[in-house]
Length: 285
Length: 311
Image (cartoon, rainbow over all chains, first blue to last red; front, side, top):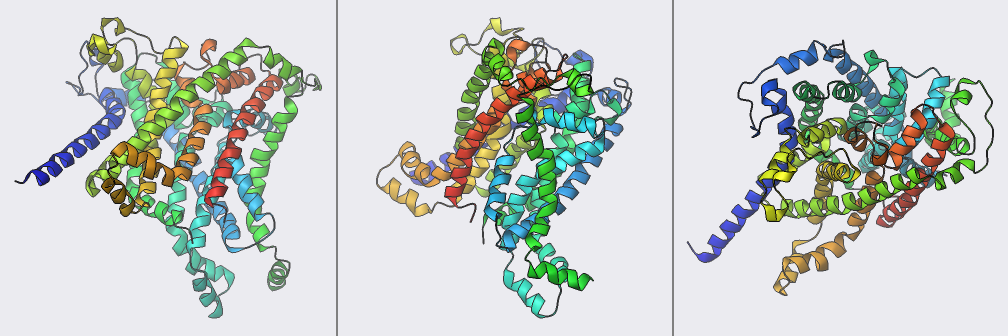
C-alpha cells in the first residue's frame, strides 16, 4: 500500500474512533439510567460499578407501575401528560398555521412588529411570568387543572411554531394557489387541497418542538398543580417520586426511564422527517 | 350572508388580522398581560393577604427594589447566575463547535449516527437528565466519585474523592449543573454548526490549505468569519438559556432547601412561592431577571435582523 492512502486510512479510522467516543460519552447517562432501572437494590451501590446488572430484575418497574410509592400507578401520569401534550400540540399547530399564513402570504401594517414581538416574547423567562400567571389562574379557577396547563403550553409554543411555519408557508409556490383559484377553487379548497398537503412536513417539524416543550415542561406544572398528585404530569411525577424516595435509585431510574423513553422513541421515529423539514424550513423562498 | 361577509373581509383587507387574532389573543392574555402585571406588582406590597383579599394592595413605590439592592441574598444569587452562565456558555459553544467540525469530517453514515445519538441527549427531558446526573454524582456509590478516585493523582484524582458530595455547596453543585447543561445543549450547537459548514464552498477551505494554513488558522481565517452570524445567534441564545436555567438547578440543589445555592431565577421563585409568599418583592426580582434577559434579547433580535430573518 502506498504511504499516502495509508495515511488517509489511519486518519479516517482516527476520526471514526473519535466520533464513536463522542457517541459513547453522550449516550452514557441515558444508558446508566436504563441499566440502574434493571438492577436489584443490592447492585446499586457497589465498590466497583458494573455497567450491566448481573441479576436483572423488573421489580423497580413493578413498583413504579403499581404505584406503591405515590399511591397512583404510572399510567395515571402518562395519561395526564399525553392528554396535555397532544391537545397543546394540536391547538398550537392549528393556531400557528393561521398566523403563519397571514405573515407569509399578506403584506399588512404591523407585520414586522408582530414578528419582532414574537421573537422577544419567546425570550421572557417562565419563572418570572409564572408569578403573575399563578395569581391570574387562582382568580380564574384554573389552578389544579389540566386545561389551565394546556392553555399555557399552547401559548408558549406559539412564537417558535409561528416563526418556523412561516418559512414553510412561504416556500409553497404562490403560482400553485393562483392556478387553483383560476380553476375556480375557493380559498377553503385552496387551503385544504394545495397549501395544507404542501405544508404538512413543516407541521411535523414544528409539532416536534411543541411536543418536546409540552411533554417536558416543569415550572408551570410544578406551580399550578400544587399538591393535587392525581393531576401531576410526568415531569412533576418523576421529580416528586425522586423527592420522596431519596435513596431508592432503582425505582427512581425506572420512573425516569418510563418518562424519557417515549420522548426519545418519538424523536427517533420522526427524526428523518424532522431533518427534511428543518432543511426545507431553512431554505427561504 | 357568508358571501357578503367574505366580500367585506376582502374589501377591507382584514384577512391577515383575522388569521392573527387567535394567536394574538392567547399571547396577549397569557404572556403580555402577565408581564405588565409583574411590572405593576413590583411597585406594590402584594402578599398572601392581598392574594386572598384580606387587605387591599398598596403602592409602595420603589420599596421592593431598594430592599433587593440591600439584600445580600440577591447579590449572591445574581453572582451565581452570572458565573454559572460564564462557565456554561463558552463550554457549550466550544464542545458543540468541536463536535460540529468533527461531524463535517466523518463519513455520511457515521455522521448521521453520531448526530442522532447526540440529539438523544438534547431530547432527554430536563427533569430526567437532572435526576440522572444527581444519581451519577451521588456521594455513596455514584459513578463520578468512583471514576475520580481512579484518575491518577497528577490529574487531580485520588482517594479523597470517595464520598464527595456534589450538591452540598454552590461550587460543586454548579459544576454538576454545568456538566449537565453542556451535555444537553452541545448537540444543538453541533448540528447548527454542521449545517453552517455545509453552506461554505469546499474551494474556500482548499485554497486556504494550499496556502499552507493549518487547521487552527483555517478555522479562524475562513470558517469563523464566514459563519460569524450563526455563531452570534448561537452565542446569544446560549446566554439567554443558561442565564435563566431553572429546572436543572432546582433539582440538583434539592428543591428550595439550600438558600446559599440559589441562582437569580430560583431566588425569585422561592420568594414568591415559599411561605410567607411575597409576590411584590418576587415581582421586582422577576423584573430584574426579565430586564437582563431583554437586554440580551435585543442583541439577539438585532443579530437576526442583520441575518435577514425578517425579510
